[in-house]
Amino acid sequence: MRLLAVGLLSMASVLAQAPARSASGAGAAGAAVRDEWPQFRGNPNLTGVAVSTLPANLKLLWTYDAGEPIESSAAIVDGTVYVGSQASELLAIQLSDGKLKWKYKAKEGGIGESSPAAAQGLVIIGDLAGTVHAVNAATGKAVWTFEAQNEIKASPVIVGDRVIIGSYDGSLHGLALKTGKPLWQVKTNGPVHATAAVANGVAYISGCDGVLRGIRISDGVEVTQIVTGSYAGASPAMGASATYFGTFDNDVLAFDLKTQKRLWRYENPKRQFPFYSSAALADGKVILGGRDKFVYALDQKTGKVIWSYGTKARVESSPAVVGDRVFVGSNDGNFVALNLKTGAKMWEFTGGAPFSASPAVAQGRVVIGTQDGKLYCFGE
Image (cartoon, rainbow, N blue to C red):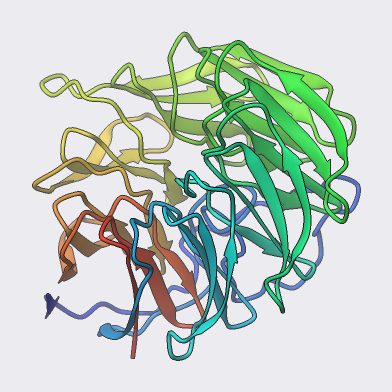
């Protein structure tokens, strides 16, 4: 492995774009923003924007070997890193030194891309056997489980007293946070692979059935249905009044949620490959990776390319924005920091396997896992 500092970057900006607040009756409006990364993409809007700052020069602080591939992206809450592995284990690791606090055994079959969500003393995650697990964050003991009818690759979102999670059983499930009791279930016409993005009490899923759905968290009523015509595995990122996501039809789409009309569509005219990476929203840009081996920054208003950065393999990792930097992994085994405004590479770390998981950022550190089971933590 090698750690390469390519340059220095000003840390004058703490937030490139603050995530919008969301609510479901027990909303977080008015609450202080904590330096944490409690779920996939950092917040219920799935914007991928960190509230933390990072040092200009990052160094590798510790490595934890999970023994099996890590496709799950980490959550970081109260100084603890939570992450799942293909060994069917949910791990709790100290952010300070990388020491294991506890491990929880899920059902055999592994934990795939489902990333933990941590709140109110619980850690929630789904596994490939189709079970949602709620684990005591302090002890690692099981609190409850919920059985879906098929595998779970979506990540849970905790909003107030609810857990929102999709399954390959074709449903989005609303569960009671404290008990796991099913509160509602919304059937779609295909697997629910994407993680729900939540805004103003509504959970939005970019469906494998070619439909963007908005489902009210309080009662499970579908309030928005936009036919996109595109199979989407990427999760939607929520702007002030629009949502953005890539598809397996080789394009990136933007929809106005008020008019329910498409704002723009981007497709590379020369390289038609799917977009599996979920987008980050910052500085008027939609930033995501493509299976064409590029990271793109698109203009949030027009969809035009502002910059692109080439890698040596597909980019399925979803970017995290920290101040003026974009952090993203690639299946070429490199984890990079790019200049948010220009796309220039500022820093690079080369591991021994693909980085298909997404980075998590909190308390001045960035954490990401790899396909060879290594979990890396960088800071100073």
